[in-house]
Image (cartoon, rainbow, N blue to C red; front, top):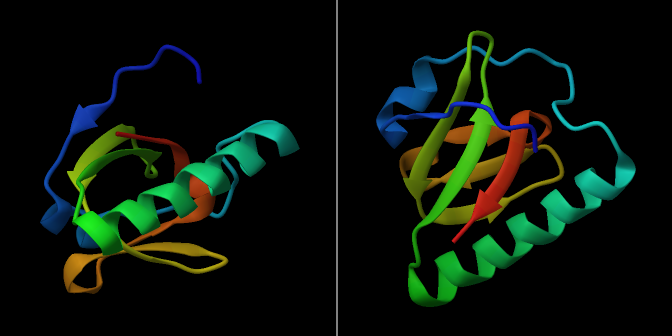
Length: 95
């Protein structure tokens, strides 16, 4: 991940964001690593309700949200209250 400033936002703000259809990562290796991070976050979220940080990008800037992952589909990360982030806009997921 390139050294970029990520602005902390609240989960409730995500539903007001616009997400382009382009992928933010550059390689298949990075994409596979992101998927593994998301799967781990899902396990931690469902078992222990552990909050993690999701670093992502909307149509204007890079953002980070601290939240619990409740679901992961092939295209989206699902948070509480049905809030979703498109996987192709996620840079990384950290504990």
